[in-house]
Structure formats: C-alpha cells, structure tokens
Length: 333
Ligand code: SER
Image (cartoon, rainbow, N blue to C red):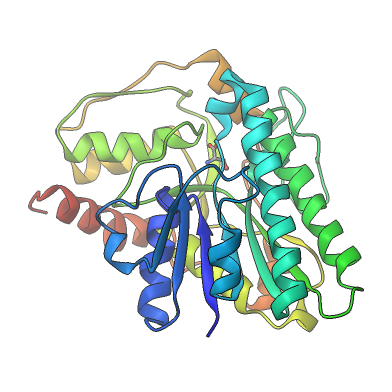
C-alpha cells in the first residue's frame, strides 16, 4: 500500500486538499507534516501526523519509507508579504525545505519506485516592469524576473525540481516525477491566508460576512488573477494524475478569472449591503502586486491535461463563496 505525504498540511491549500484526498481514496494513508498538530478540520482524516520543520532531514523519512509514499504535495512555504519581512528565513524555509523534500523523494524513488512530487508555484515568479500597462495574458516563459524573495524562491525551486526529475530519472529504479502549478491568488470560503499579498481579496469577503469594516491594502484598480479553492485543489489533483507522456513542461499556469479590488468590493457590497470596505494602500504590498501579471495564459494546461476552471466570477460568488462563507460563520444568506 502506498501513501500521500502533504507538507504544510495546516495551510489553506493543505486543509482543502486533504479533505479531497480522503474523499477520493479513503483507504490510502495520509501522512502530514506541519509545525503544529493538524487542525480539527483535518485531524480525523490524517493517518500519521508529523510535527516538525520541513528543513529537518530526519523529520519524515522514516514514516514516508515505512508507508511507501508515492505522492508528495509539498505545500509548506512562507508567502510573499511575510518573506519581504524576513527574506533569509523565507529562503531557508522555501528553498531548503523544498530541497529536503526532493532528497526524500529521490530516496523513496530509489527504494520503492516512482514518486510524483507536486509543487505549488505562483504568479509571483513573474516580474513585470514598473508601470506596466494592463497586458495580454502572461505565458509561462515571459517576464520571469521576480521582484520578491518568495517569487525568486518559487522560480528557483521549479528549476530544482526539474533538475531532480531529469537527472535522477536516469538512475536505475529511481524516479522523481516533478510537476508544478503557477497559481493565481486563491480564495477559500472556509479559511484565511496568512502572510500573502493576494490576501486582501479573502480578507475583504470574510470581514464583510462578519460585519467587520475592512481597509484594503492595495489600490482600487489593482487587478490580479484569482481562483476559488475547489478549483485550486482540482488543478493539483488533475496535474498529479495527468499521464506523463502528455506533459510538455515542468510548470503550468492555471487561471480562474481576473478582477480588480474595486470589483471585489462591489460584489461584496451586492451580497452584504452593510459591508464597510475602504482602501488604504500599503506601499510595500502595492509594489509587490504591481509587479504581478493582471492575467495568466493557461492554454498549455488546457491543452496538455484538459484544465479549465469550474468557476467564473459570477458563479464563484453566487455558488461557492457566499453560501460557503455564510455556512462557515453561521450567517443566513
Ligand atoms: N498568494 C500568494 C501570495 O500572495 C501568491 O502566490 O504571496
């Protein structure tokens, strides 16, 4: 019997992914790694919960080998705003943590066969020139000049994964099958992000349902691509399961829809007329979002593994966010 390993399990993506993995294959063991024990929402779904540092070489090797882990979702990372506060810590967690997990994947591959290594990358790998005009959707090979430590780490780790997949693929019995997704901002109805720069979208909506005022830390016209959490989880699973011979690249853009901060505020006001959203841009965070693309071109993911998001902007609010968020906070719709 093989098993899943999920690092950063308590994070937003981790919690949502673990629920789906458990629903899809209840009999397959789920090993998690996080600095803290699993939160209540996922604790009953986890077979082995490891607590520790993702950069520690011994942190999960024994359990991963004992259960013959064949799929790693390496989600543990510090996000972009947090990384600008402590870039070297960010580099340590994001880069050394990924290297550590790639080494583990290699040793699992040698011992038990192919390991699929799924890595969430980000729009932060792109760095558009200051003052860029609204651009055409950005393709994977354009504007790869990240301005944040987070973006630099993600881009480098994509290459590290590509290296491990290519180099060690040639060893007998060993194979690290590395696959990366470049996510836009992700919004969940159940959880809030910490330390990211796309967090304003989630924070605005979660504040409104609770009747709290919210000051958005970017300008009204700031436009970024976003995706709903169920689509993000679906993309991770689709890429993990895609036949290797259909894949033409290591890292794929995936997109939901592009929306400005003012448009999010207007949709929030439509659904919660008493919402109190104001705009108080933070210069550091504004500079970060200004370097990111307004829109992603995900046509390669569409062609290679049939990707398409389930939610557009209207259905995202009407069918997912508003009902989900109201249920989460016990508020009537
Ligand atoms: N959501 C991330 C952040 O804001 C970007 O991938 O840091």
